[in-house]
Image (cartoon, rainbow, N blue to C red; front, side):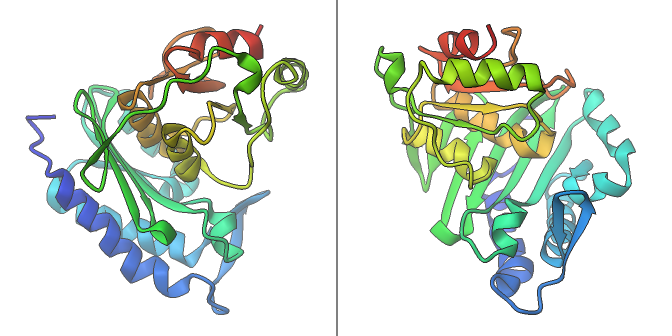
Length: 267
């Protein structure tokens, strides 16, 4: 991180500026162009414009590889940038595109900085809440300069509310998760997106998150923010999340309960 000499505030400013210029004018606009890049996966003109603007701005801060969600849809080879030890920017121009396209406020702009195969800095901007969360590996997570620490959950599993994103769960895993979740607390709303769900975990609105598909732009920034606030992100086999493992399944929770939650969901 020190070798890259990245100014985290400058990155945050670039994110806000890209949103203001490319996304905000199209929010709840009747002229917004919406299409499907694959079945059930929406993309808008705002997604593409924001990614392009962010890529240009970020490369003036550090001229390194760009791994962007929209570019990856047509150029899968960009994933190779994360398989090396070289640094790279990871961009999710609009996380929660379906919410954005429907005029709902639960969307976010997310950027992560990867180096040596791991995320070393992450930014989540929630425009409709005017909230910017920033994490630097080993230095904690902040929200408008205030340090954030995820609250320690109760020791009672029945009180643990979680967000279970089950769209991509294999049938056998889905069945186990349904059984296990009956032993846990209530299920949180699944109408959000990673860019709102990770902050909800850090704020203590839910005690755990469960995902199956873990694309880098959806989780790089969020996992780092969660870890820097006192949480951990584990694969079903108990290994820590990695940008390079290509795995599926992810449980994120406070470090005091994450192993218990993982075992219950993936027994």
